[in-house]
Length: 355
Ligand SMILES: N[C@@H](CCC(=O)N[C@@H](CS)C(=O)NCC(=O)O)C(=O)O
Image 1: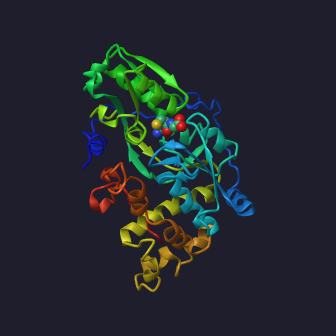
Image 2: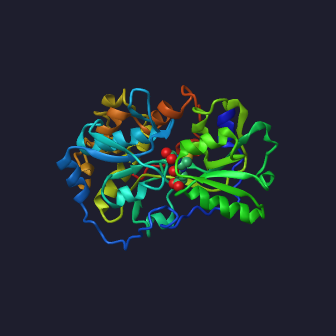
């Protein structure tokens, strides 16, 4: 296990479990009245356009970023490719929009994007007042704190009188306030609209520590000048279940995103991979036949082709393949699956039945 991975998995000390953000603090300032946008409208628009519009991060290596060739790459990006493959039969029929934390919900509310796949925490207020609906959790996370190894800071309590950097429009800034208040620690915050500016300020020493999801902290080891000089504190400040978000009101579209994610998880459970999927097409197992659309007509019930899961898995891979491609042992992150393992391996991922 790498040093970084150990930090990531470190003691899951949940000081308290509040991770909600109001519409105002999410930067939207635009709560909704939960009116519907019409079930079926989103899929019809995507088919008409011939392309899925996905809102993503472009500066989070491992999850969503733009590589040196100008391509979007990462775990969240591949989930977008899987949704495109399932809905349009082509994993490349997708247009990515880079969205900041503050912009992301507005882009869903205005229909600029069909789906948000951007390290977004599922919270009550986002699911209601902000007007989102969420698909299944794709990455179980928690908030952490990064400091310089030489700083002498080894617990949150050591941050008294120090300045902590945090990004606006995130659950992160709200959790920080809650947890530090609960511990009775006086500290200063400096807020940033942009992750890169936050990391730059931390590297320059204008903040003593910075906080975000542990995935976001681990991801920064790819860009910090001297990664070995930094560490993530063991305390975890919150639960951060990261999930795809769509606009509230189009139940069919929410169902589609939901069942594409489940298809990726179910495929891993069955041992169906991008390479071996064709060997399963004549399987006698009715569960596998229904997943792959050989029988059961489940795709049609969702408004898709019956082979929607086949398309997603064969073109992009199962959940574990996607995880390993971007975060696994052969990557610089080498993140053990932990909570993101399948349930039978001690993790939290579990597909609802394809029936
Ligand atoms: N999961 C949290 C935090 C997500 C978030 O936006 N984190 C920041 C800090 S790592 C980020 O991704 N920033 C990217 C950027 O500004 O480009 C949430 O949903 O509020």
